[in-house]
Every structure is written in C-alpha cells, then in structure tokens.
Image (cartoon, rainbow, N blue to C red):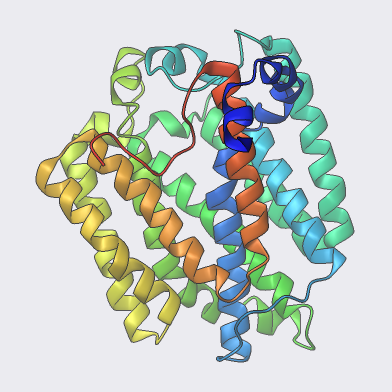
Length: 334
C-alpha cells in the first residue's frame, strides 16, 4: 500500500517541482564524489591503524568537508549542464537547464551553491578550502570553460577527471591525518599518492566508461572525447587494463579495499570488453561504484544513510517529474 502510494498517487506530481533546483546539482553524481572522499579517509585510517573498521564517530569539520566538496562538485555539474545543453538533448540525458530552469537562473544557482560550498570548506579548515578551490579549477574551469574545454579533448579530459578524483581523495586523507598529531609534511606525503593509485585507476576506468553512452551526441557536437577519438572498444580495453592494474597494485600494497573491489569489478569490465554493448558498459559503471562503496562502508558505515536517502529521493523525483525509472542498478535484460 505504501509503495503504491509513493509510486502512483497524483499528489506527487505537484510536490516534485519543489526539488528542481536541488536536482540541478545532479545528486546522483554525488555517489562517486562521496565514495572517493570516504576512500581517502579510509586509506588514511588504515595507514594509521590498519585494523580499524566500523568507524561511526565524526566531527563537524568532517561534516563541513562533505557538504563543501559536495556543493563545489554540484556547482561544476551545473556548469557542465549549461555548456552541454545541445549534446545532452541529443543523448537524451536527464537535464533541467533550458527546459525547466533557464541558463541565467542556472548560473545564479551555480554561484550560490559554490559560495555555500566555500563557506562550508572554510569551516572545515584551510586545507579543505584549498582542495575545494582546486576541484573547481579542474572540474569547473579547465574541464568546461573555453578556451580550455578539456572535456572535449580525449587525453586532457581523462587526466582532468583523474586529478579531480585525486583532489577529492586527498581532501579525505588530509582530514583524517590532520585530526591526529601528524604534521602537514607527514600527512601530505608520497605515501598518500602511492596508496591513492589503485583507487584512481578504478576511478579513471569508470570515468572513461561514462563517456561511451554519450558517444552519439558528442560526435554530432564535435566533442573529441576518448571514445570519439579512439572508439568505444579501445576505451573499454583501457578501462579494463586500469582495473586489472588496480588489483595487482592494491595487492602489492596489501590494501584489501582497493584490491578486492577491483577484483570483484573486473568481470563486469571483461563482459563489456567481450560484447562491446552499451548495456554492459552501464553495468560496469554502476556495479563498480556500488562494489567500492560497499567495501568502504565497512569502514565508514555512516556513508550508507547518505547514499540511501539520495538514491531513493532521486528515484522519487525522476519518476514523478519525468516518468523515468532512475537511478537504478538494473540494466535492460538484467
């Protein structure tokens, strides 16, 4: 009865427009941001005390870090939508800009959300603020704005996403280290970068695969993304190699999270490589994020309620606003 009410009652059509401005931030894209931030925290915690799991303690600086990085990321997602109205339309992607919210309104909201994110990061600490500014530089300006427009350049687009992942990871790592007696030099070390590599390989593999479903629209708008330049099969091949390399490197580093998550994700990449179909690519993207999130939740279980709320709020919104069953872990023929 409750499920039928939330799914079918017409009152929800009147409620969901309230959330339009919130969903301009594209909350479903928060999942990889939160996972990478929590991965950075978990990697730092394992480096300090290897066998700590199920950590439920938190402080306000950590909360402000999550809020700040989330809002900064969301502001870059708004900028991305503003710049991609044409290609999003061709790719039949979920978008609000130009249809429900004007580009001018979207720009104002981008500024407001970005400013709120910076305030939250200031409350978290000066290192968090630096990481937030760097994230906007790479994911916002360099990735989306002319004359850089790295998202339309295959190698630079991939490297920009990788660096954004590293910035998010490093903000989590530094948050944990600076909460101890460790100094800045000890916290920001080569160890941090070395431990990050397996996670960044997995993150980059997923980022590469996300460009494949947009292939048609990117070709028609002249965007030279990785699959446009090298083809979808080569893109999947490189992504699969990255995940395989992440497993071996994670194993060599004795990191149970990165090595196990990569190993469990690898079959989905292998199937996508063999069959070279969009539905298999979507499975590899969705399931690999889910797998890593589940492993990280064993260390920081408080990630679960945030993911749960956003996932089901998004399903509610997209169903009643656009009649779309999204987000979902199901793919056609599952």
